[in-house]
Length: 490
Ligand code: ADP
Image 1: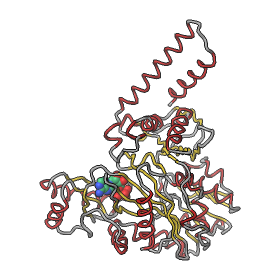
Image 2: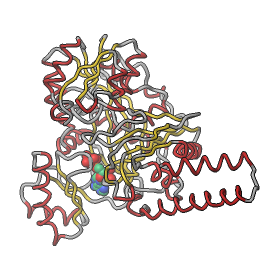
Image 3: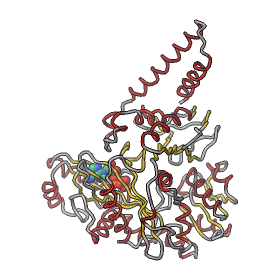
Image 4: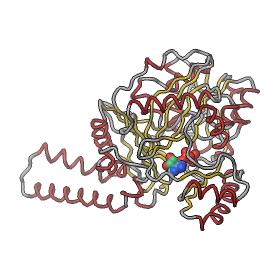
């Protein structure tokens, strides 16, 4: 494997290329019209233009990507996350073209790509499941009966669902039929597959997922958990490792379950087994993601393992070089997804140009991004600007470091989730570790950001007054006014 084509864009394309370069492997970027000047194109050893800006004419085009491999002589493809990363048809075509896909087998992708077949596979190992239906609902009356047994509220989910889409909460039996019809038609139009099933709605859950790695020699290990409970629209926005709530015994139990889930499909490469956990720390299997996750860096920071390098080594046929017992958790890591979104306006994407873009630096700070000052956030793709990841000796230090880094981060021209991230870091419910997936819904309102802005305006006014009174404590004022400026720029 001398040359890898990265079938992705933005921060993840760069992140993959960096590991490949450290391993002495050449990289090939692919790019659409909108990404002509993107950083991943400049970073790669070679770049191939693959089409127009909409992703179905570029990053989702299987033929164009395989062609780009032929043109450049790349022998392997890393799909990153999103786009074609979990597409079994793509995986089969890559194989048929005599290329290596850095990822699991098409069979594993196919089984885990459907929540029902994933559960069926996991059941071979007695993995705890949320009570509900095990098969796609065909008879509404029967399903309603099952919902009554499970107990309302229940959740109707699309078997082919993903990205937090295709879920409906049903509060009472009286609403069941109507919600079922809506769920089926939504699933059909969104995923081309109307299969739905039901699950008990867990009242105050945490989203805990386990990172796994499997090689082609039957070895599977887990790299502990990530807590991804801070979500908006059922989508993650802040992740951390380890979780503040897990006990070593539960961690070991969940880790074993995750390894078993991976074993149920002879999993190879990096994957993530997702669980939902109730207040009594009972956990249930949700699904498996058969790719590198957005939030993988927090695991890298607490384990010291470069997951992309491991993926590449596994794809080369190597045996995983460490055993489960060699792995230990060292310190604490938190990631904030810096989205071009307006938290005050229901987290709707905000487009524009990065007029100022200055990233935080210093001990324990990692920024995975794909933009520079002056660049535009294209409207065609995911509105994530960067991932701000911090590492500390413990959770407290990681939180303090995140707040410091958010204050240093300067972005103007676009509204971002930075201010929201600071709100979360400073909220008692988050710092106590006792938060669940409803955190944003329960505690966040645009007014809290406005309050923070007003506090800053007050500080600015006080500094002004001090200046006018001639009471310059120069060092202090410089420091405070910088702080105010940074915050205002966001
Ligand atoms: P997707 O594939 O769309 O991401 P998941 O099954 O992974 O769907 O669930 C996404 C999120 O939805 C979870 O992290 C959790 O917040 C919520 N969720 C899923 N299943 C349940 C459930 N049974 N009870 C309560 N919340 C749930």
